[in-house]
Image (cartoon, rainbow, N blue to C red; front, side, top):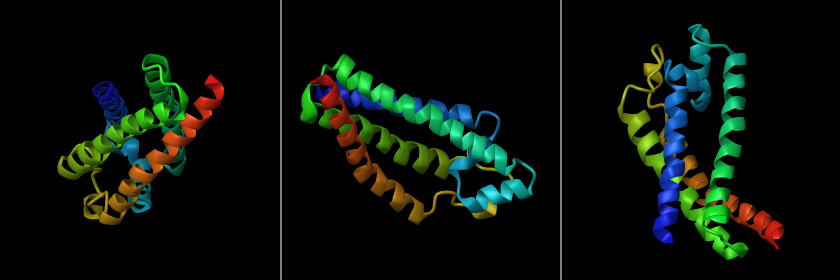
Length: 163
């Protein structure tokens, strides 16, 4: 079962990578809502985007990704794996979300953003690294504590609905 849950986490990570790839398909400015305010302001100043477009893309990203990711993990854990009760649901949700988080931190942030030009926005190179050490600390903290909280909340909700 653990291997299956890890594979489901890899699937969720793959979905994240696909969303990111789609978001930057016409250039990294398409995902500038994920960058720091300084990069966003520079992009607006350079005429690459507008505050309204940044806000719209951010809302669209959240409206698609959050429900999509939640739906994915719930289908995997409760629909496919047949978890019953809080503990079964919690550990499976936590593993899936943690694997996705590791992929995001190491593959997306660490390698793709940090070591390739795919996420470089022309005219903002002097603002690199786009993900600062402080940003990385926040992301690792949320990724560990935050994913545990999300797993606990989803498992608690599903435990109520299942029983």
